[in-house]
Length: 224
Image (cartoon, rainbow, N blue to C red; front, side, top):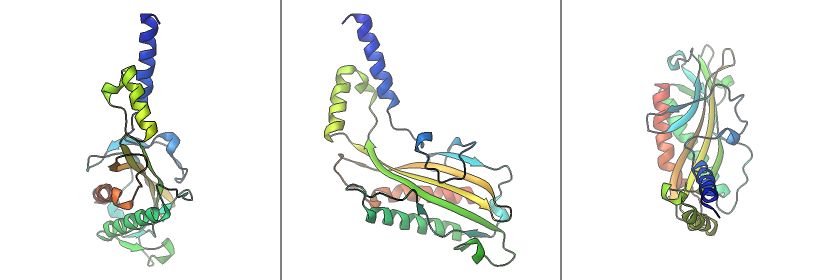
């Protein structure tokens, strides 16, 4: 293999590996279809130091409402538990996030289970939210692994389960003004839980509790 071909192959491998590094936000192809649409989402930094894809209407005013209709976080699409993420883990994450959201909302609003449960004359905001994915994926390649020979070693470790894995939780939510049924805010968010040591280690709700707590603080800042 001549020098120019070696350089070409090396550059191709470098681009491929760097392109595979873990993204901080949900990629477009990972959108679940839960939201009414995904138009105009923009990447924003959150108070906790995270990153989200978000759109907020120019008319958004959290103080314009006194009631929020919210029952629980949904699991969307229908979950398919497996050996690493079982049904109990999904239920535990769902319950923990639902309780955290209701506690945060309850500090500012009256929380009811549905728009029809809101008292007459209420200024109601509808919150729709769902967990759209729970996964564990190989940790992104480090810069020193883009050298072709090291890349082979890295790929082998990933395939045999020796590479550390990032746990990821995907959430989508939107707020709708109950008076006119118009969406006033929407967000698509990916948060990272604890890092697992290999691809055989099971994912648990405990892996995400610290990340969910940070989500709660970001949510509180958003409706403040």
